[in-house]
Image (cartoon, rainbow, N blue to C red):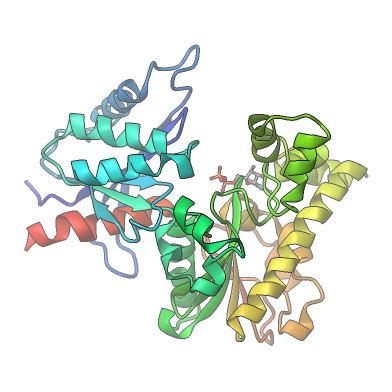
Length: 393
Ligand code: ADP
């Protein structure tokens, strides 16, 4: 009974598997998809956790079965996988074949922390339901439209091309979803709206989207570049790396860990959670205040830079854990930007909520919005469009 309209969305990390089951039956451009279930299996391969990703997926399948949502159901149409790095080869959601899987494996050197887990997730899902279309949705894909001027690093071209060194950008499904949702909030066609999206989660990135097309983004070859993040440094002088090698005697792996795991907010003040930093600031903690100030200063630089890149900005939108919840970060990031046409409404900004909303003043030339991101829904949409919809016919 019922057409095959369910999509299982899998986000496989190195030690966790997040899943959502979404029914696309009533979905259109404006919504209508129904989230049937979601969950997370954590501590994969760690003491007290499940052994591997195969067992994690069986655990998830068991949890769904208990809710009457077995993955053996004929209603399941496809599986959508979040894949972090698509390189230059995968610029759109892609039906997974052996050849595509090999292509994702070829990209492991570009994303050694992420792609291997994504690949494992794909393999175990294919074993579970080999009959189903499986779709890879890439974090980099939305940024494939970056003009060369924005995507190129100014290094020797032959070296860059040989090793695939360029700006790829990440969080693409979020930037795509949120920029479209911003246009909807403004009651306008995405093709007519220029928006700066600030995705501020544990990882953080900014993007400049002109008429629905991404034209610049803050993350680069890897998710390390750009904004200050929970544990990542974001932008720094690349010579810092040579200096640490030569003067501090650190190895490449030491520096990789330092910049990815022990920097950002955590490195500056010992905490990577903006809630805790807010509490400490309220008590007058100087290190927490400095971490906040560095974080906000970087954000303002990108807002200014991307305003210039876009020329005309219709909206600045905050999303993800910090962006959706921290009125302090939003307020500080955009304070005093009247010359850029930005006027916040402090009362609206302070109101908590779960729906997309405006936090700018009515007379602000640039709308400031808060839009909760939904990467799983975006992946389900892409997956269903590619794998399932034609078979419904
Ligand atoms: P991820 O990148 O892991 O998906 P999220 O988008 O869930 O991250 O963001 C997680 C971060 O959001 C937390 O580390 C915390 O700093 C921040 N955060 C969550 N809730 C709040 C809140 N109420 N106020 C301020 N920051 C928050």
